[in-house]
Length: 263
Length: 155
Image: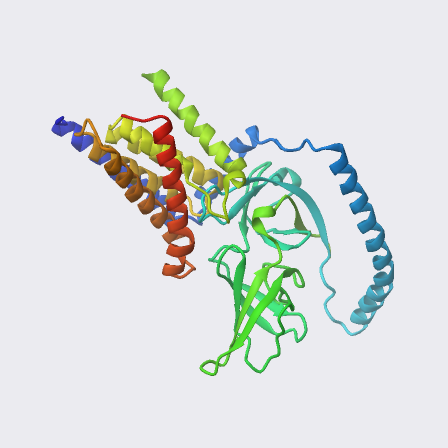
């Protein structure tokens, strides 16, 4: 049995106590600008070695993707023409009635550059940062719906807190009755919606969107789909389980929403 | 000595990079092993100097937190504690039988998962956290640790 000298033991304990205290300090001041600055330095360092290692694809796969995108483009273009007229009319009517005109957004394209390696992680990295005018509190979406919100941005990399992060409480509304509720994530795939009364009709497979009064998320973004609805006589609210429309382990291309200046 | 440290720092750096970029490759139903803690614990077994390993655990955890962590400081806290106690336990023992080593791995990985999830997943229920996140990820990490140990045993 080896014996450690006493002075060495004391030194080891001092190391442990110091590192523990520093870590606790970081945790306690998690929202501080000091932590944000350190984090953006960390992301800048990561951006130096970040590269899209799976960017090579087979020609056939690329051709299929182009065909698919062209088909979707022509469909969307036809729909856009149909809706543009109605939208213009709607704006004119809103102006006449002095109702606030909705904000318009620009989309900044980004790709996934890293996933939190731990199972309990609910953050990802995307390859767009301050250089592309991506800042904190910008909303990140994908083709399938809301992904999350930027919590920290470096020059070329930004950290996104996923919508499935359990600390989130998001104002949402149902599709049919536009009933407002609060979305609380349960795990990576599911969330519950609370504060919707049992008298409000909510159907299974109904879509859930961000609410009109949310201060963080723009209104009308797809969040998920209702999986189960149950009415309990013990409470005045429904129990609604929602599946997120975006599978967070299959993320690849995302867009950062930026409110257009002057609108 | 310095060369050894640089080599180990580069290894940790590589592990962090691989787990950030390619963790989806070995993710099973969203459960991913914590490879970084496996390598930190291996070091604590092979070179049981609590003071040094605390610094390694703290630095690696902080680097990971700064790049992707939701709560900065939580990985560094948990890694420095597990590295310290593993080295502290191993420092007086020259030979550790397989079952005891596995038990130490299990306790340390479970403690680390528990501590991190307690802070980062605080919005979820305790038992739900344990059943869906902590226990599966601990089991997966333990399997990786045991496989690595059988492939390349440490002291």
